[in-house]
Length: 146
Image (cartoon, rainbow, N blue to C red; front, top):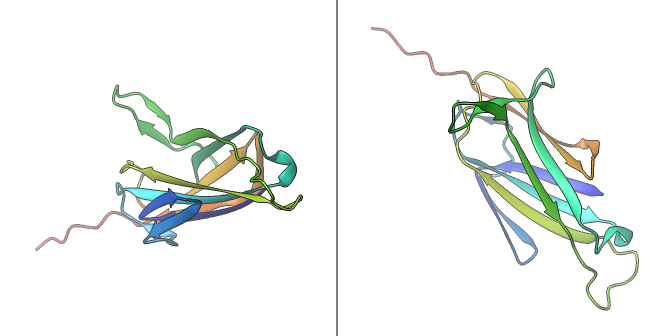
């Protein structure tokens, strides 16, 4: 599969198209701030009409999972799991890849400032070096003393 991924302030998927607001950044914060991930997945002809499992997980510069507190105070890995499936429209030429667009909007997350992070995508347990979104969070502002 061929994947196109983009970080944005907000994203929306409608009628097979992605609508992206404030897209294409790789430096943000300091966190927490809401953000979106736009995904365009080109599904090969022979993988249509099949359910695919996907996972997006956030890791730090060392490849370690980024942990965030839950409502119960327990830390868990920041990740998104889902499934997608696309069918072949009638009359489409055999061999034509099929597009799946997904818009993921995430609420503000307590991602530590001053770090480098990476969203890693896997589909059906497979990943690729190109299926990654790397970004940096600015350090917290230093309060001026007078």
